[in-house]
Image (cartoon, rainbow, N blue to C red; front, side):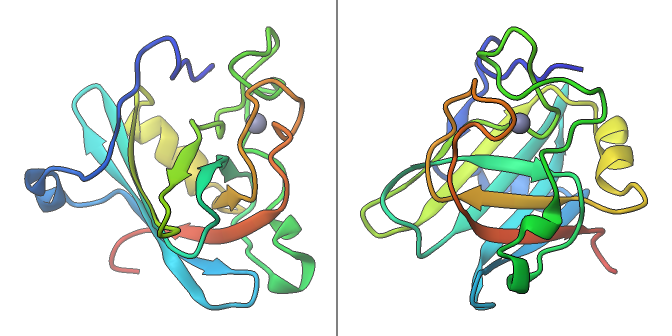
Length: 175
Ligand code: ZN
């Protein structure tokens, strides 16, 4: 399934509404830097007609950063998070919404760090919650990665997004 976030007008909002915080998340991730220090958190919340991915990160350089779901739920500092594998891509597409052969299920819109280095984003997608959770909690799990640079939405397979700065492994709430 392609993830047409650009075509469907996915909204990136600065601060999620308080009511959305009452909804039980489907998945959580604690984000770490390459030195192992805490960097923020991510969570996936069911929404009408899709899901909301909320991301909070600190300590980033100001400006846009690529955000992806990666195919393996491993965030090893010793290998600069390359253990997380490539972008989540169960259907064998190429990278990027601007690529005619794209895109990966794990491709997400860029998120922007403010002058304080903080990212606070809510990304709505039309992905079906049950199907997405099957992919996220498959045998080898799934990681979420924030990159050093922006995703150009077309360069296969990485989006030319630079180093993996922050990584987190998804887990189910209460586990
Ligand atoms: Zn991709």
